[in-house]
Image 1 (tube, rainbow, N blue to C red):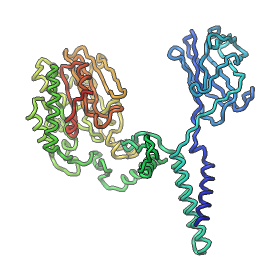
Image 2 (cartoon, rainbow, N blue to C red):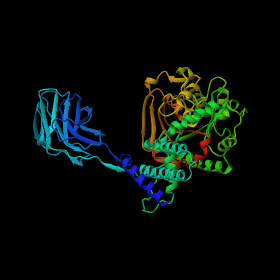
Image 3 (tube, rainbow, N blue to C red):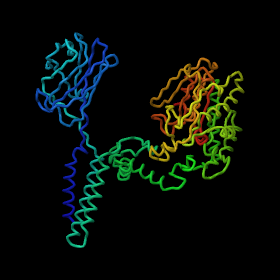
Image 4 (tube, one colour):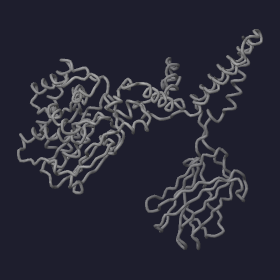
Amino acid sequence: MKKRKFISIALTILVIVITFNYWFISRPLTFSMDIKSQSEKPITITTVLNRKDDPSFSKSYENRSEINLQKTNKYNISFRQKTPPKRLRLILNQIEPHVEYQISNLSFRNGKYPVSDLSKFKSENAKLKINDNSLVIISNDNKITLDYLERITARQAKKFDLRIFLIIGILSFLLFYKLTSYLADFKINKNVSRLDIIFLAICAALLFIPMFNINQDVKSEQENRNLAKWKPLFNKDHSINLDFGKNYESWISDRFGMRSLLISGYQWFQYATVSRYYKTSKAYLDKKTNWEFRLPIISESLTSKQTDEIIDGLIEFDNFCKKNNIKLYLLVVPKKEYIYMQETFLSQNNTDNFKEPVEKIKEKTSIPVIYPFNELKEASKKDYIFFKTDHHWTDWGAYTGYKALMKEIKKDYPYLKEVRQEDFDISQNNLIRSDWERNFYIGHTNRSLLNLPEKKALKILDTKYNYYTHKNVKNMKKTVLYVSKLREKSFEYKKGADLKVLMTGTSMNEDLTEILPYTFKNTIYLRLNTVKDIPISDKFKILKKDILDYKPDIIVLCITVENLRALKNLASED
């Protein structure tokens, strides 16, 4: 037993030494400098590093980049070669003859290894002089070669990756310990098959393959979720992380190489082997009709307590709006599954267990609540109001919701002119346009919940949808801002009514932004969910400060019926 452990440890150490470059990683070596000139033309700079202290640059590697001096004076480039450089050469191309170029602040690794003695540069085809810590270059040609005569001492930064080290160490030890056990048994028992040992060795060796391509992404687009984060053995307060084993298992399970390929293969196999209904834990596809629906079809309704909390939150927000002369409207979008219940495997009609809570909100608040279930149901007889492969409403669905909303708004502002269907040019596409970027894609349900390979997902898109583009789109001034803690779109339409409107809520607003802003002169849209650096607990909160800064006349809060429960703490002071 002790001998086997000793051999296994010795072989494990050997493997760790051999795989040194996988767990003791060399970071790219960066080189930077400032360059100035009166010339406005872009130039190309080639940075050449030589591995030997050799003026001929016989063992060199290089990197080339174009720099536009009108936009920036900073030149940055990086090298992934592991051999430390000993000589530096700069080649400036496409420069203007007889024009001064100044280079300064030359260094490797952001100043850690400065190239400070500019007098050590030489050039065969340019005049050089030093002026105020800058190297001034004037050439008669459009190409300059600069050689630095001193030896470079720059080294790459090294990073010890404990995660990869542990994977290699643990897998190696288990492999060698099991192999030595088999060999011991083979020596004692002649009937033990050699094929067992070969099979075990091959299987164990295959375990190392995923280890060398660890996924470093924060979120998996394929699974529409955040991947497990690395949690070290020691916490920030220097205490021991007692759940390190579980944390490590979650991390490696989410990030091992070829995981996405395995998921796609497994989903393709599942899809190919079911006769009609292909399901995941989050959604299902009717292969006969290509309708996709999220699960569960019948969502849990709001409890009486939850409904009361929503009412309290809305009353508090409405009071804030009234105090600041703002009219609030609540547009609640029904579930796709309830509108198209006849297309689901349940084959029922008009099931809607959110109707009663919505009616209670209408009754207990003075807020105009628009819940266009009946309007959408009727409109679905004419055209698609929800996408077959996405949970968002179509342009026709959004237009139907817009008309129901305007019916309420015009009770307070009867002079408003509605946008008509005739005001739009209509085009068709089988892809989905439903979210922030306003790009066409295969659909949220299709992409994120069913995990189908892209080729298969594209084949499911057998329906062409009508897309609306306003005929005066060129007269709409639109700006988009997506930074930390803020997702904002603003619209300015001079032909609209002289009112300021604030749209807010979930992604159901996205298709609505193709219609509603053409009614008013100024419209701003603040997205509440899926915003950068906003904790989940705050994703449905709107800052009172943002409202007061904009000073709207009208607020349209558009939200899906399932997200109503998040409105209990809608407005925030912070």
